[in-house]
Length: 216
Image (cartoon, rainbow, N blue to C red):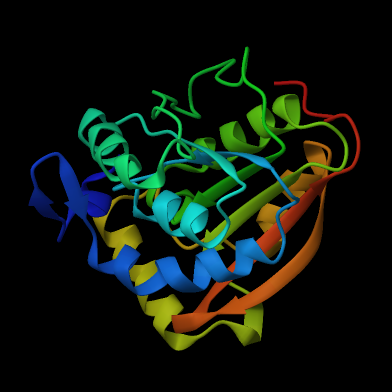
C-alpha cells in the first residue's frame, strides 16, 4: 500500500475508514451488483480499508469476496469489516501483484481493483493483468476503477491529479486508457465496457478472451 493510499484514513480498532472509499463505495457496489454473475467469486486487489468489499456483498449477498493487500494494516482492517458480512467476505490475502506468480493456487470468476494503478509503478499494472490472465478462465472479468487519461475527453481535474502524482513519485501517474487497453490485449483481455462514475472516474471492464501473449 502506497503512502498516498494511507493518507486521511481514520482508525477505529483494527478498522480503517477512508474518505474516498466513503464517497465511492456505494456507486461501485451498485455498478458491480448489476454486472457480476450470480454467486461470483471475486478477488479484490489492493483492497485498502476493506470498505468496498463490505459494500459490494451488502448489495449482493450471493457474492463470495476475497480481499487482498500487501499492507498488513489494510488486511487487518478488511478482516475487521468482514465481521459484518456473515461469511461472504473471506480472510484477506497477502497479495503483491509485482510478485511473480502471485495468482498461483488461487481461483476466481472476477478480479476487481480500485485506485491502484495510478499510485503504483507501471509494473504493478503489468503484474495485475499478467496474474489475472493466469487466474481467470475465458469469459472472466477484470474490473478497474479510477481516473484515466482519455485525450481531449480527460477532465481537467484528472490532469491536475496526474501532475501532482508525478511530482510525488516519478513512477506514478494517471494512466492513459489506451495504454491500459494495450496492456490488457497483450495479456488476453479485451475492453468490453467503460462506465462513467462520479467525480470523473471510470469503471472499466476487461473480459478474458484468449491466452495472454506476454513473454516476460
